[in-house]
Structure formats: structure tokens, C-alpha cells
Length: 67
Image 1 (cartoon, rainbow, N blue to C red):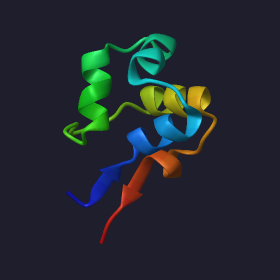
Image 2 (image 1 turned 45 degrees about the horizontal axis):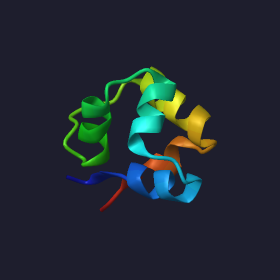
Image 3 (image 1 turned 135 degrees about the vertical axis):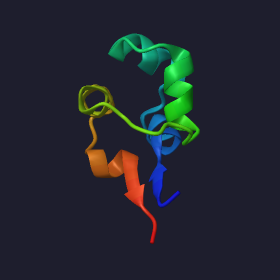
Image 4 (image 1 turned 90 degrees about the vertical axis):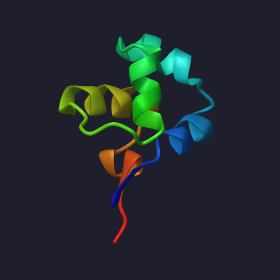
């Protein structure tokens, strides 16, 4: 898959757990895990916005296109 989700990197940089982030953005830990492991087929812009707001980052910090 050419798009990589670097959520685990940002969680580590911000010193926050997946569970904490899931609670803050009102998403199930299971769904966040699917995103984190790169198994998601899509991501809602509202979810991406909430992640960026909580982690104080840009969408490009989370999503990366690999050629």
C-alpha cells in the first residue's frame, strides 16, 4: 500500500497511548488500532482532524505517500 499511516510515531512523540487518544477523539480503541496498523481502507476527514487537533500535528505528519 503506497499510503503509510504514521500514527504510532506521532503517539510516541507526544507521549500519549492509543487508548488515551481514542478516548479524547471519541473513537473506539479497536478502530484506532485498525488505523494505527495500516489496515484501514479509508479515514474520515473529521477523524483525521480530531487526531491532528489532539496530537498538535498536520495531516502530513500522520499520512505519508510512499512511491
